[in-house]
Image 1 (cartoon, rainbow, N blue to C red):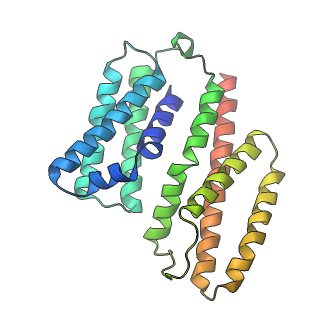
Image 2: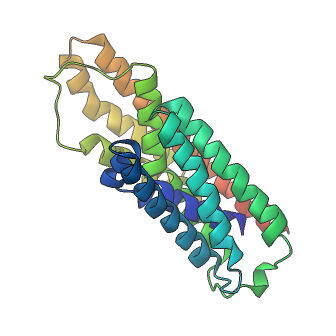
Length: 240
């Protein structure tokens, strides 16, 4: 149940939230921010209700909607799009989800739910969601908060290429862990280093080299930790 709530939260808060909706939540008039936060909270509530799949548990989407709206509206009203605000916001959401799981869903056995998807499948699904857009936003926020983003306008590549490279490398890392082919991570790191070497060698800006290295290691670390956490969670679940 908790894994399903986390999957719904990650999908709604990151994967299914468009840049336009996010900009509306932070900018413009008060009425526009109010509307955007209502739409976003409604998506969160609907996903939680669908993922849990217990249709007579109508209080669940109501609580999700109200709590998510309050937390996000306070963030967009008084906070900024920085790393500390992101961490506070996510911590508040996770606390609410844990409380819902503990006091509303703890008495419901997994065999009582209509879902035909196994617990292991839900864990793997949640892990793959976590290492895509949520990890990209976390890495980007971390780099921007520490002012580690290069400001050289001549250093331009394909639009969104870095984001998709990060997506693919983390998908591969997670797949290597789940299939117990850990040596593939070393091969991936070596391959990326070879392709990046020419670019970094031509660059005269030390900040660019450090930026690429920090971003790469942050991406790899997040994917590896997520993979082993998911594998550990599957082991614990099988024991019970």
